[in-house]
Amino acid sequence: MSQQVRVAVFRPDDERITAAVELLDSLGATPVADPMLAVEPTDATPATDADYTIFTSKTGVELAAEAGWEPGETTLVSIGPGTTATAEAVGWTVDREPETYSSTGLVELLADEVAGKRVEVARSDHGSQELLDGLEAADADWAETVLYRLIRPPESGRSAELAAAGELEAVAFTSSLTVDHFLAAADERGVREAAIEGLAEAVVGTIGEPTRETAEDRGIDVDIVPSEATFEALATEVVEAAAPSYTE
Image 1 (cartoon, rainbow, N blue to C red):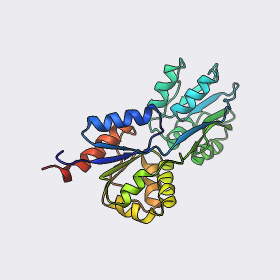
Image 2: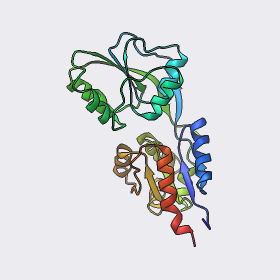
Image 3: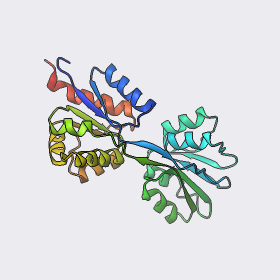
Image 4: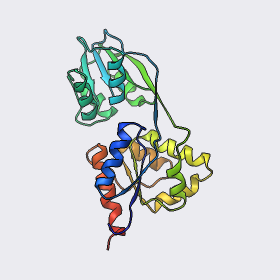
């Protein structure tokens, strides 16, 4: 790349943002780290007597494990490979994982087998209603435990100002909540419309269809949705798409 490709990333301010920055550096991009999510634990733990226990994030697994929760006899269900890897790292065995890493995929995986079963959903306060509706339709006896809240760090918003000034070549949204928090930060700075206009000139990537739908519902045009729902795939495709305009 003969000119810098500035890519905003919004992952939580922990090892995830560090890994994102390192990856973008390795791809030759200029990372703009602007964490849009902070984890606020509730100190709750999942029920211990459910037939099925569903985890939808690595953060949920880590918090439950730190609190001493163990799967026991439950059928342990993970939403995808990242969550599964974290579960295995804390010594748990994941029994089920959907082909599609989403709430829809979880419903498709379990719909035919959870009627009359106790299903525990352990996740954040911003989990999809689609999963609960699907379990209800499948006649499951479900319960939800909120393990943590996802809040927007008060210092977030540098990326919104850069987008408004036309100084971002790309952004990588990793959840619907990062989209909403980006726009809330832009609102706070009085640059929402200008930021959306700036993103129209940039490459916008989202980690999956739900995030794409959220972005487009809010007026943000999305250019990239990788077939693999990982940050590595998202970052790679976003940088590849943004780079040609800046190479000789």
